[in-house]
Length: 66
Image (cartoon, rainbow, N blue to C red; front, side, top):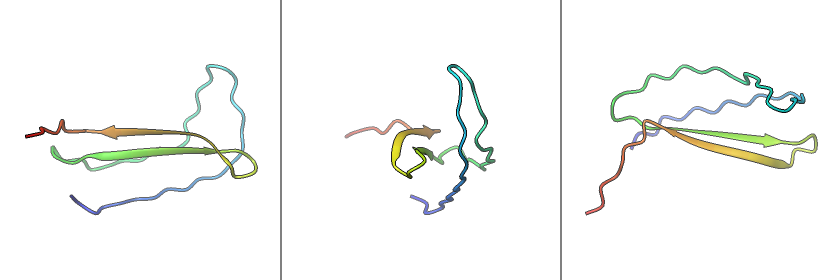
């Protein structure tokens, strides 16, 4: 396991209409064949309370259980 880690904090308040998309951030990652990247997106309201989250694993290798 590699300890490479990057944190990106961006702040701003906006509203979206239903089915509207907004690009929040763009990041480039050098990803090798065996590398795995976990992307965690957290949503907070105006009072800094967590109201939503999502987690995606990129290039996940299926682990074989023996």
